[in-house]
Image 1: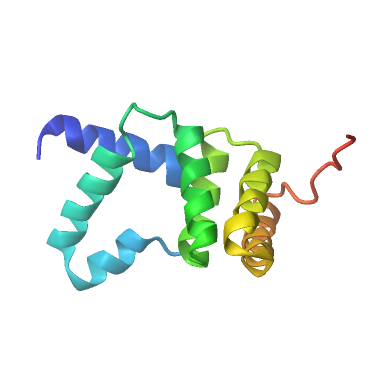
Image 2: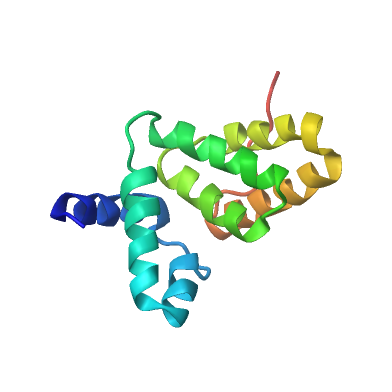
Length: 133
């Protein structure tokens, strides 16, 4: 891999996952196969997440929506954290999760909102200010 990909991987990982207090998938991968973990990280973080087609907040809203619909709570937690790190508003993350309910059902929304609340609480951002609409 090029030095440019390594640089993008490091920068994107720092932007997304800085301060993340739970286990990251990379560490799990690395405990089984360090070489493969590096290759996966360079591809996922350095090439896919670092692409310029979508800005980072939009990319994280997409990831949060997909992970909520698929009921992938651990990855959802990681990408909610990343979304907040790159500037997603907590209310926008909640809205993305609520929108999933139309396609995936309200039990999925309830679980995803619980994960969002957990992350916000960990970051000292809970409770949210009530919407005044």
